[in-house]
Image (tube, one colour):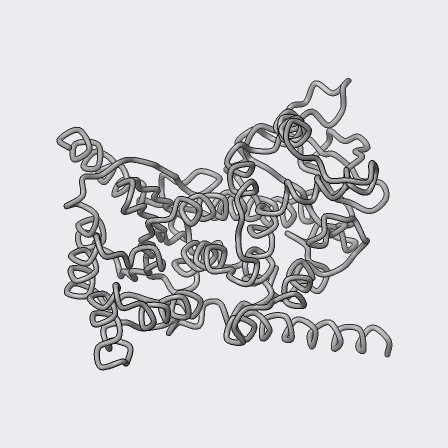
Length: 415
């Protein structure tokens, strides 16, 4: 316990230093994981000197965590997203959870201590929110996608040793072991709670300027949030380098063809510096914000200090009809990663690249079908929902809104 307290205290000191925008690097700024003692779970949010929102996952509401729930309600007015609130309705039907029910639904009504997404983070950015929730949910289907591909070829899905061999091959090809763990579990496709929590926790500080503390006891929620952070890392980099390429193309002289299923037709790999921090705005123009996801069951924390400047990348993706990460000119998009980049050519000595091309977007089935909008990733989900109608109402407005935008754009192009 003492070791956890010392580690948490040290990490907090580092986090405070990371809030100095003069120390910004790309991606902005830092991501740290550390462990904490049980009695420090709420202290992290209480001691945070910045405006703070506390968001709760359904898994926090367990009988053995009633003291924690009471402490949260005493110190904060936590946020319950609609999917979480829907899942908490189960408390009303289970007599053994009466103690929790009376805390959450006193007098059979939701406690006034809770609030919803009063900043309208998800509903104000439906294209972006649904796109990333779809990508995160797609992780859960990676093994099933490959199994169905094999079934198409040989007539049956792999089971037993054949399935184990298929998974080993996916790992050999680069599928992350965390993704394999999530994809190897059963899940309810009509409950996108984990993914929407991850998206909200990462983008709400950027949009609202208020740090977000997401509390969960579900390892999947924790890991989906970390993956969302990584996705936004790369996509902000793509947005920045696309802008710089469009304005300073002469800076990028190393080029060669690149074949990728991500793009339609020919794409081009372009060399870049390993640490392109020159893309960031000057420190005086940057304002920091923080996402903190706390696994209360494992006493594990990940904190991500980022910049509200990320908002420009979110707004671009929300309004771009082509589903691009950034505008590289001529309707092209950017593929960009700041981590270990695979060689794009066996004869190329340049290690770090970004790739420019016309984006080919993928449906939830995993089939490459050409340039379709990313929110189609969830169309199959919406059409197959068999759960309660409120679940459909959460996702359908996002999808319907995007359909209206597409029809409007199509009509404008036809004029």
